[in-house]
Image (tube, rainbow, N blue to C red; front, side, top):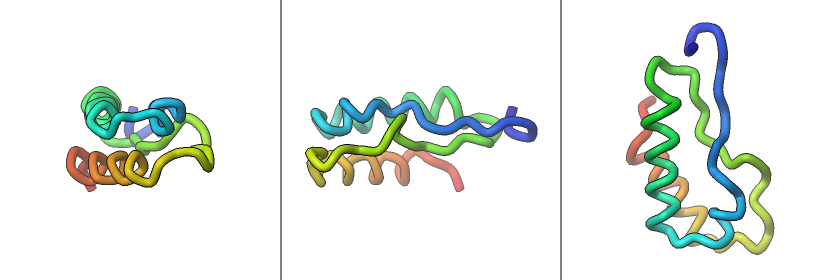
Length: 71
């Protein structure tokens, strides 16, 4: 699909808010493993994270994206 369609998202904002960071990392890895092959995937939350989302959880999301993503 990478040359025709772009997929975005799949990380639940409730997970980002509640964590824990290890679960966030595992879900990010799963999203990338499933949706990224062939290109055209944008890692993102399904909606805007709420103001209650802990910084440590957002940091885990970003770290996992950098760790498992391809650029």
